Length: 178
Image 1 (spheres, one colour):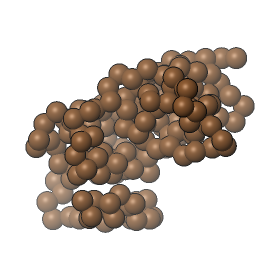
Image 2 (cartoon, rainbow, N blue to C red; image 1 turned 30 degrees about the vertical axis):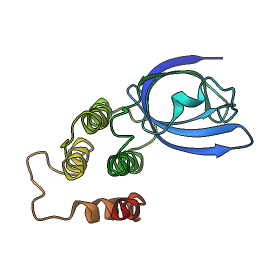
Image 3 (cartoon, rainbow, N blue to C red; image 1 turned 90 degrees about the horizontal axis):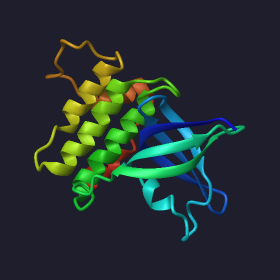
Image 4 (cartoon, rainbow, N blue to C red; image 1 turned 120 degrees about the horizontal axis):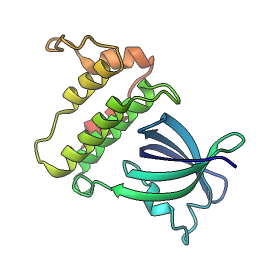
């Protein structure tokens, strides 16, 4: 069985079977990947706490038949500063939703990885971190959806992103209630 090591940020998760979880992770070296974490929903799981949403983790992954399998996970940063603030959690969720929906599977993009990691870090540490509008614009520029030298002063970035995704942002509902 072939294995590899990378670091990534957990974007999304969904339960699978009785004790497993399918995770979408944006990694530093492989871009967005979907992996399965076997047994993480069991109370005795050592990997479970490491694989929470928004965590920056170091992963050891084995190639699987359909999905790769997480064999080990270690938290690098859980960004505890924003987890006590519901507004910041909502903004982190939206940032992860944007990265998930605007990036292709297995397309390495270290600029996007660093942008997301730094956004979560700044949101965790500072009361007035980079705005979500600024993050969205930098993400669009990194992915080539927006010219690097053009501002977005008179444009509704959310509507533009929704037109690219061809669907509404789920996090928008959550942000409106916080």
